[in-house]
Length: 405
Image (cartoon, rainbow, N blue to C red; front, top):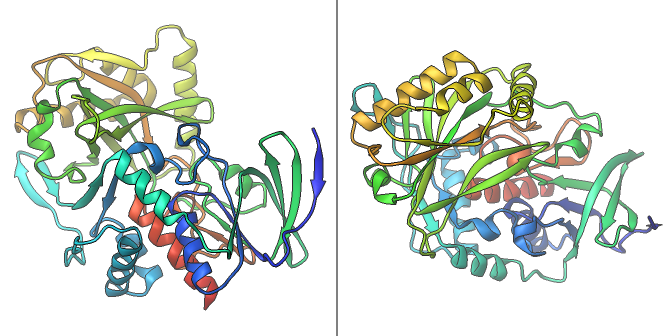
């Protein structure tokens, strides 16, 4: 493997990650004439282009009350709304007035179910690609490196970055400041700096339910594609209607994700059922081992056919992965959803597992994007303050403004 060293003349800032957090951080820095290097190792489905998961997923931009975890970092709810509006304008999503929401609200709807209303702006895959192409036409202040950052280390007041080019060549550069927006799979680079992860929001465990006919969840969809139905410690998650299953790689595990397919001929739909554990410490390792043990046992399947209100043949697998209490609560939740009329379970549908959320290490601490290490900022999923595409974009913008102050 070849290696080389070097620096980029006039560049003192590196942004790792070319998703919306990294892109909006670069746009804000460029506005203030800060020269930066945007480093991106694109996901396979993004076909070498900037944008990360948003490039091929079809996209929902969740608006307040989603993302209120960013309020403290922006200074106030009014400032958060102002920045969100500005970013939507930059992305060309106009005519979408954000609701005047300053707190979470929950409305009882049926039995033990509670509806937490969320609004979202849904874009098709093509609309999202057009948006990304438009906003990644950067000024000369932004240089782009199509490479993978494999290591970050301190050298006095500077940061050394090791980059692996597509041909395997290793290159080392030095910068004064690093913004990390490498997403949920890039945590090892941060951990290797000695940065300690935070407990964050806990961890969510569950399954993704897929219906071959999207009309089976039409009543749920009418509440909003980003609406949450709550049942004790459970909630619905990420309604894609229409939508397809997308398996995310996480270490040696594949997680049952979902993508929106608004501009396709897909007739299917999916959403997640999640159970929240508020203590992540110790739980994640145990669950990962349960998943690995089940996968190597020869009896584990990641997809189960179901007919009826309960979890059917998927129940024993869920119990094995997460324990009896989680399996029981997810089963009760699905039954409640069916009996309320929000989903129709008479026909064949599928349970995909595992589904995890907030399983990755997060590094945001207090009310700052800067970590405990000097001139190292975290944004987006890596920060852990809020998740979602608009929230990632806002976090990149706010992190840049914090640096500029």
